Length: 76
Image 1: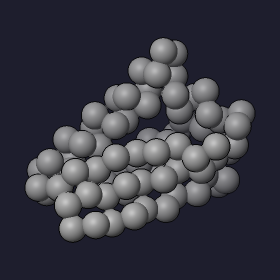
Image 2: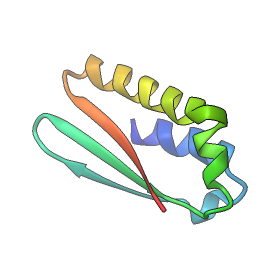
Image 3: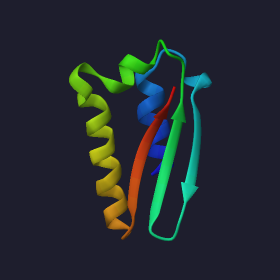
């Protein structure tokens, strides 16, 4: 799941080398934290929040296959 997020978010932003991923794991949930430049933030959120919502939906689908929950948080 983390590789998927790195690939997709890295493809969307202008400065992929400056994107920082961290994750917090508990037995039932994984929370991915993504820190990036403020100029790249609109590219991740998308018009009306559609891009970030799609990323979260795909992440949850992948997590459900593994029997866990996952969430994605953007750190400004």
